[in-house]
Image: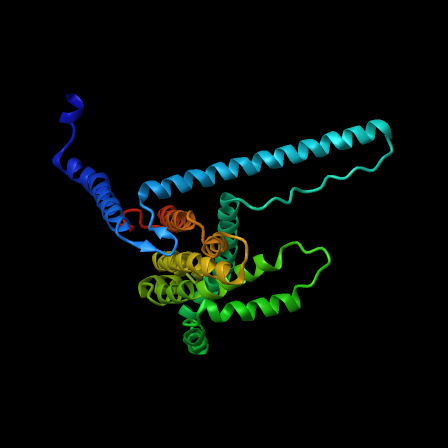
Length: 319
């Protein structure tokens, strides 16, 4: 009772906003989904409801565990065979062959996440410095703006075949560090997601408080110091707005690229299930849809958390 007395009306209102309203919305969504799914028939059968999709998610977990058990058994057999071979001939040359089983659903999730972060980091390395230069210099802005406006609307469907051809021609190696499919997907993500960060960084830098710039001039700060101490801190909110947009775009682009180019990842999983056409395909595709959306949500929340840590304005409301 004493604990309840410490709560103010505002605390209850905040709890309702944070927990109760999202829960009610989710329950309403599940109800509408169940109602609609029961009334839609497709060539693959009835659209699966929440329970059917949950069952397919459990099946994917079981398949992952079974595949890991096969991998463990494969290496155990290999080690036993090599041990027997060395027991007969201590000078024998033994080999450890890698397991070549098919990637599981969770393996493909990790592949997609790793690929999107590669493309996103490359885009950030290019976009942020270029955006700072564009925001500080009118001449650089005039030079860069036409290029940005031309390439910003280009669809990943147009970039993908071009990148695939160039990577195949340029990246030639007998012992490649990365697969061509991985590089193709990562570069396509980079080309599509660098523009929001570049534009928002340029806008943030160009909009910084002129009084701060004048203070920098009075203190005779160098160009690099001005950028590091004044321009970038002032533009942090806009930079992170661009980064959040870029990461979301990159995640969408990656799924489409994997699907069309048959590169390993969640996109390929969706396409394979679509081509499979079994009675379970719809449910498994819907599991992938929820996974893609949930990971996108986590990526956005992660960027928001990072912004709260690096932003100088700790009282700013971040959403």
